[in-house]
Length: 441
RNA sequence: GCGGAUGUAGCUCAGUUUGGUAGAGCGUCGGGUUGUGGUCCCGAAUGUCGCGGGUUCGAGCCCCGUCGUUCGCCCCA
Image (cartoon, rainbow, N blue to C red; front, side, top):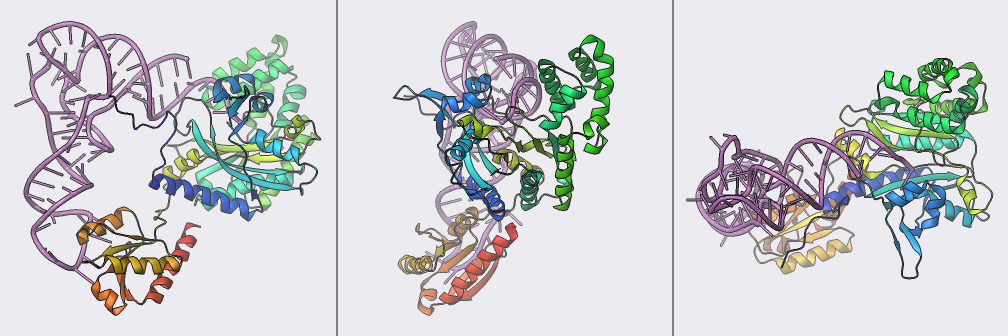
């Protein structure tokens, strides 16, 4: 008989305790920052009807990149590849009774049938943060500022990443009125702009020239050169600067500046997915030479809620992924040492197991997480186990300690030992707990 | 969907040139001082050499296929 494989399914990861610690750390930072802005957590089903995604995204996307199946009732269902349609559905369903602006977040897993590569897995976790009901650029600014704060909360400095900002509204004006392209040409040009960083200047120019009608090609290239050279919104050609789309982005940058977000830059070539975005779009880029890539992004999608046949609700959101954040943290060596959730490992000396168990039980009664070594092994083996498990404290329990009711507590990292009464034991362990929390921030 | 690299002990890898008994370090387990560890000493266990087929007297090594991993392309909600 062939043995079963121990490998996880392609594109998925087994979360061993040390992996889960990292994930919980990332989730914890996300949750803390989102809640600090007054966002409340929600959740949605793992499965959604096929139509929900088909309506929103391109057919290719839903057919080629989702996990889907027919359920026992002949319904076509999809394992969610993203959160936005589900949360839009939830908002649409209760649009009349919600308190606006509605500030919501979720931390959920998703599946996409893709070829795995660096920073991309078939099963992945994302934070989704959205603000519903505000059309003003204050909402755009809030989401981008929160992205910035999340990076800060992970210990990143401004130099480590940059935030690139563009606006679909500007792109629309630019394509239709400034470059005078029809819809088909505009789509091609958007794709080309999106690729610009990956191809040579010559290829970019040649391919751009082909998109224009022949008689407009030369003039069009000059216009594109002007667009691309704009380092700020203000440097865009005059006819664009006067549009409301540009004024809106200028406002956004003013807000960001006021909020202390100094590493946000305007980038006319940022296109981002583009299916449902209707206003600003942004992406957070890793600046490290070893990991130069877009980590996550977001934008404004005012039209999506109206797919459910109701009044549109203006919405801005973003979705940082755990995989890319983890890559970022490892690349910049920002991952903190993450101790076990177990605070005390009880090392049992001689045949004091029963007394050790009683003491452990009392500690648990005081809300301390305690693990007891019940193996009866030699001392050094017990100690090595505690270290390997990355547990903060060791507590040595032998007959002498039980008789005297004075216990030896060892701080594993500092290699220091104290002999303490039960009450002092509890306060010492709890004091350390609070310090640890502060260090994480 | 396309291209490159790669798969040998729990982990990191050598062994492939020139086919000839399956290796190292770390880790694990046991012991060395029966109340204190990471980096001491001694000893031991551990492999369908990813999987399937082919060539050969003989394959970890050569050939074909396949699966996984990884880097890039495409795509990126």
